[in-house]
Image (cartoon, rainbow, N blue to C red; front, side):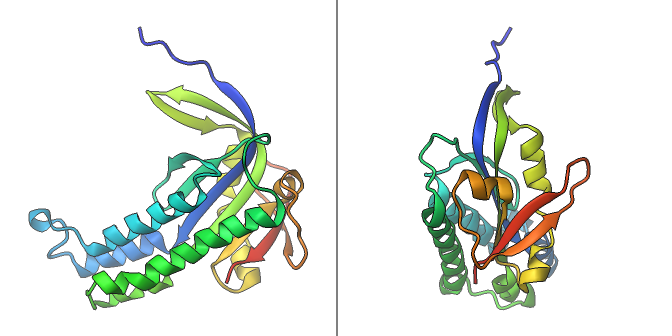
Length: 212
């Protein structure tokens, strides 16, 4: 019988970096390239672009965060309250650096990617949003993989659907829960105050920061 490590309790920041427009982009690319996508082993270069963007997100936030999981169009990363996660303006600088790298990778895609179909040319419409929360979570082993679970983890994921973009006016933002703002000493001057409602949870006070 395989020995399973017991679950470990932790507490700290929970960060999600999500690429907006990911699903529609790949659907459009697959449609535009249906005659060559995967035919004879060929894969549309749009997939390589998405790999580059996700790799850039991980590279710029790990460290100081620890990668928990790649989730399709999102990166889930964690930290602990007594770890090396920066506080205040330094943490915002880390997220802005991640976003700048994201935009730079999009801008340079044309240097090596020459497809001019409408679907591929819409890559610039991709954008990035962050959700930052802080709270308790559990790290456990499931089927040989490390999984991060807990009520606050579920809540952070559900906050990917929120009202920040409508209030800011574009898709690039950081949504910070009040719990994360207090735990990580994040200034909220100039931010947009929001109250998010997630089923089975009390109303969540949060702040939205524009990135562009």
